[in-house]
Image 1 (cartoon, rainbow, N blue to C red):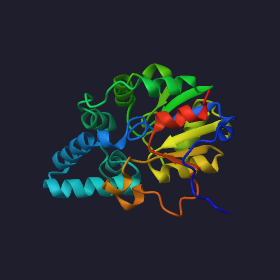
Image 2: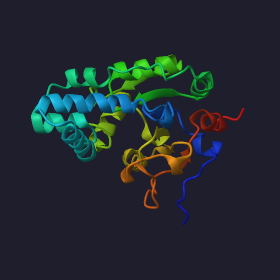
Image 3: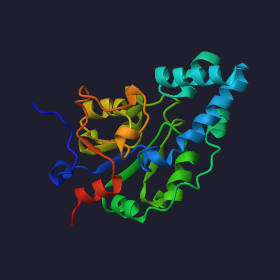
Length: 237
């Protein structure tokens, strides 16, 4: 059976969807905006100061924690007992001016039937700032962030369960949009329609191996590099 993800949305595949769940970074805005470069720099500085490391050692440790625990924050909490709120505030002290209003995306999200959520490993203030800059914040019913998750990040199954329980989401009637393949594994097992956002000109973008779609990722239903266009295709009327 061919499990190659589709690229053009079939409205029939989404006719039953009434819960729309969106990751934030590199999903609601495209990968090339690269807000994460600022966040990454801030996290490296935090680790460097906390542990009195050289910059290259701090960055290596930060990346190891991110890979092993889903977020740098989780690694720092487990291994060094840090206070999470100060870390989140420091990490998200960034310039959002690279994000410009995207009215087409806002209209496409607004037109979707049912409820819409942002589900992020970041914080509510970060999600609000980014979505506000894009002009789409008012189109969402709520934001589920790393604090609501008890600081346990995606892809932990318990975090998806907590999100679904808190908001009474029927996952059989839900779709999730994400930029990391591993973060769509649990949603697929829960019965959600899964859509992976990839960078435009994917072959020219520097990404780690585990961030890329592979032939083994049979839990992904669709792949797109144009979220607004994809959502508009779901409801072509």
